[in-house]
Length: 77
Image 1 (cartoon, rainbow, N blue to C red):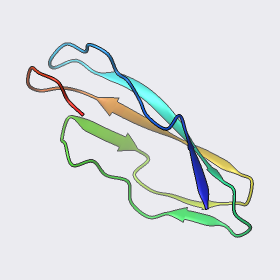
Image 2: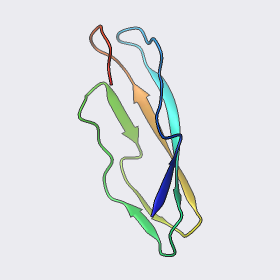
Image 3: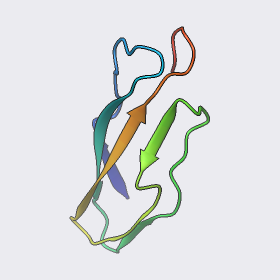
Image 4: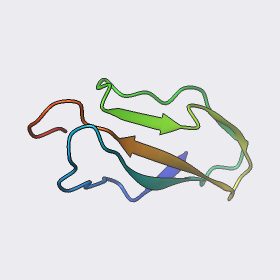
């Protein structure tokens, strides 16, 4: 079991071909170590680093950086 904070990210208005980085914290709320095998996006405008992590000990946390680098104009979700 794990908790992700915040539950969603709002990058606001980001110019095309620039980038903005936000972070999320994944906390292991279980009683066993947690391994995050692979974090991906279905859009090339978003990348996550690191793309995997583990093991995260019980009550431990790991921060992931989410980068939004739009390559086209328009709303992205």
